[in-house]
Image (tube, rainbow, N blue to C red; front, side, top):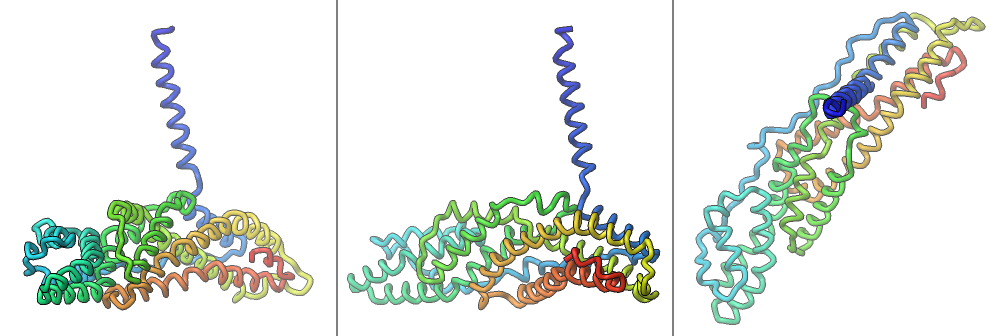
Length: 350
């Protein structure tokens, strides 16, 4: 028996893992809870619901439409060897190297921030050495990079691969938004704080921290949020159609006559809408109010640099979010209107 005990332990472990997997699979998804609720409305009221068809999600433009092309100015031709004695010499050397020219948008931003931070001392030094022409060249480049900074920030953030990943919708929602974390929110807040400093003229940057923050943004759930809100809107709109069909056929209750359907509907609302759908909907609303303001703050900070394609997507996204966020409220209004002839028993659905 002792010889077989490892095999028994392995068998128990496999059985446990299988059981846990089955339990996880059995956990109701938002889609299942919404579908179940609408089907119960159908059965209670005797009216068929249309297909629950979520709106198409706003899709980010192709990455080529979001890349801002910036003039290189005179730094590309500047002889950085003439800048001996200046710390910015190394920065310009890195920027003009083959690796610098092929750098990612985030690395390019960090190099330009380093230049913006170090160039003023070099400009002063060159003037003190009588090298006014070189100082003027550096001052011109510095002014150009200051003007380009919002665009550089856009390329590295909102137009970059990490923010694109944030908006990519998942194949399925799973337990969303219960499976989210605060890490992307913290990263977005830290990036926003850095951008505020940079645009105010404080060009210090923690390169490693910035790249880590971008990687955490890439794990964000903007796409999942859009998919969840569209899903909710699709199902609740189908439920609204059932309720509208009931009202069109006549009042649910007439004078003193209260059909069994009125009591059943009240139970369905309390148990399956208030008890199951609304808690998920509330969690979804909280996540939206945590995530969206952080994203919009950065968009506002670099608003002047947003390319037309991004602005068009942004307007479509915000219009969709506004419409989808109203879905629970519109459904509660439909429930109340349907139950009004019966004494307004759906008031608790608010």
